[in-house]
Image (cartoon, rainbow, N blue to C red; front, side, top):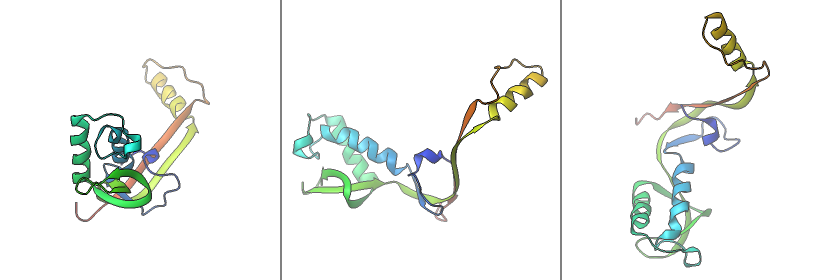
Length: 142
């Protein structure tokens, strides 16, 4: 189970789920790439050895999918500029998900606390609660 907001908007059921999520891996890659020799020269800030090692480790650990919309980087072996995204290991497919706001959930819990004699928060009936979850069917390889 994960949070629905970790998946792309409008993602249909049966979409592949990877771990860690592609959003997490690529956000990290993009944030540290400019401190390495693998960054496009026009975007490079300065080099840091720890960032270089981390980027190379990400590239060795996760699958690279080439895409014209991807992150620009140089390949470690040839130095050729490419665009692509990294993907984690396949863990399953989306089964059900929900990302919405609802009223009354916390209010009802507050009423239960009051009836049970516990301290309450004193919440209003219209207090919003965010429901954000996603379940998926595990891949048979797990």
